[in-house]
Image (cartoon, rainbow, N blue to C red):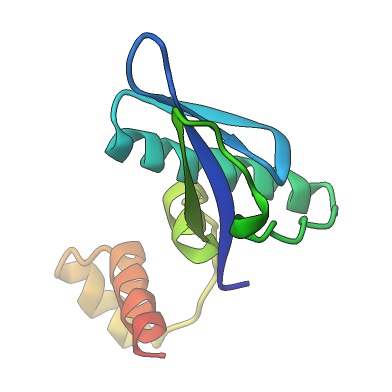
Length: 132
């Protein structure tokens, strides 16, 4: 899954800032003190809703066409972008144990130099993934 785009309604809050609702996710809400924070919070809220649906093997709703949505005078309609890969990097960074084999001489040399095996492997894997 690449990027997803869902419309969100940014409602002006009486106390200032915005509260956000998603026409395609009736139980998904968020808020923010200004437009920048509100948008960031909307992305996080959308991520939680999408992850919950995926975790329960549900089907994601087809995004409503923005021109089919009517908003009141104190609201703004914006399309929120959700990048599943970026979300997973931010929220699913739990360590996973891996077993690997290297030549004995390399192990001894690396230990003598105080090299952190996990760090080196992570850095190499990140570089390899980014090169793809």
